[in-house]
Image 1 (cartoon, rainbow, N blue to C red):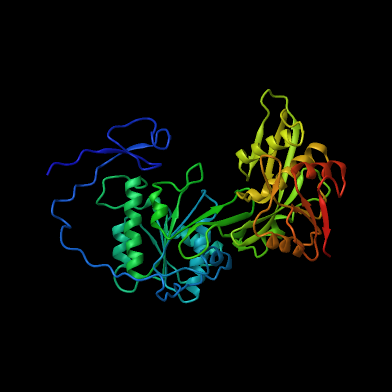
Image 2: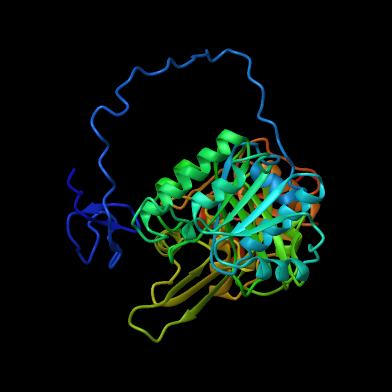
Length: 465
């Protein structure tokens, strides 16, 4: 049989082309097309036998929740939904040097000390290098089996005979390859095929498989998007390397809630759990300074309070600068337009700088009102009340809309000693220990911050203490 012609595959999206081109038409990436050997054609007649009947069950049939294997790290268990499920596959991705290998080595050591059979296979480091990190973290006495390999065939031959490990960590999937394919490690074909074989092994033997993945400059998992669909859970490790905070976020979880977060602090002894992230994110906050507002947000099922900082400055440029860290730049443009059009604030010719303190990334629309409060505070040099939190969604007509989980946000604020909250207007809402300032329109909040008035133009004060 004649050999199939080689093909050219985009390493960002997996699109296939008959010849090389500079820019991928599917995803728009430049210089991402790489030549790969085409897979061998399946002989005719293979797999044409009669299939096996599939057992069907009804929706009302009794179901038992999947068993869990706790990792011993409470924040990691929270993100995974209560522990690791045997036979599941997890993908942990993050920027280089963010702490992925450190976190997984710590989890592997804790589970091994608790009696689990744990194996750690590295395709990027030698066992000596992993042992050096373990000694630095105080984990050298943990009974973790170390190995260095990049061939999937060698890994399967090692663990497929005898007793399979309870936990298998592969660091990283981009370094693994199948010798039956001519493509280089890290290409779309190799990543997809290597992950498929490892996941098949995990499902067959009941092993928890954890794959470490690299990310692109846009923050997405490198390689085919199909890889995220193949695994049971996708966890992103976020944070800035200049900050000590690290956030482990679940963006997909078949056995638990998605968008749950776990917060860690990078220390000399590795990653330490943060039981109260709100207190940590606000620990460096200074009161009485304009351009700062405390946002009461929800990350997964956990309320988190974080400081939002804004700076409005005169611009010497024809096109003012807009710099955003930790929030959506498009949503900032919308808030600026509403403040300019509906509230009469002259922000068009100003440089705008917005930052979410602590390295946390916020995606929920409930931060609109807090961002607007920080911008107005900076523009007029009027501090937001020090012991106040702000949350609410802002519409294009300037109205402030209610958001979900308001009670949980207020409870977290009251627990940390906050005395006041600027919230959307909702009938019948009361909260013990915190005064509620219900804002109907964004212009009301602007008037209050500028004129330092408690009750103006529809802003109602409700003290339930």
